[in-house]
Length: 153
Image 1 (cartoon, rainbow, N blue to C red):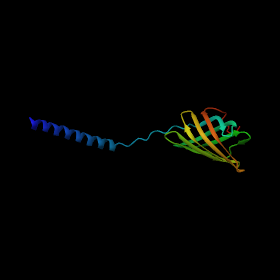
Image 2 (image 1 turned 45 degrees about the vertical axis):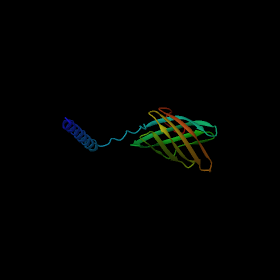
Image 3 (image 1 turned 120 degrees about the vertical axis):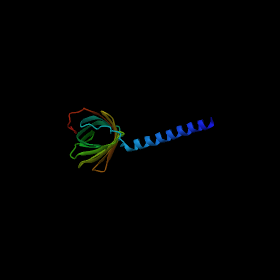
Image 4 (image 1 turned 90 degrees about the vertical axis):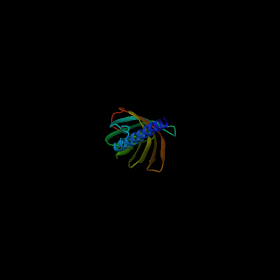
């Protein structure tokens, strides 16, 4: 009787080991699928700016092109007393986790923003370095589909 139990135990153990090895080969043979990135949709994203100084204003980001995780467009920021009218493209990236970063350079200022993007919302922290050496920082909240598609107006 002991021999039979031992044989059954060894047979069951061998079958389990073979199954685990076979499953490992099957799983290894299949390519790992990347998590699809949080989409950054082309179009006009518009919203509000809240400066750390207390000033409030508006922002418009018109995304013209998207290539995988990278995008390009124009951004206009109006925080009194200094509006930033876009003259050069805004370039940025978005990660699979929805982290977004972008920057834009004009003769008047350099803008950087970082934060989170969802299906139709962005929540960002920004810093603007002006050509005269001053700067502004704060938060931006944008929604897709707002504005007139003309950043800076």
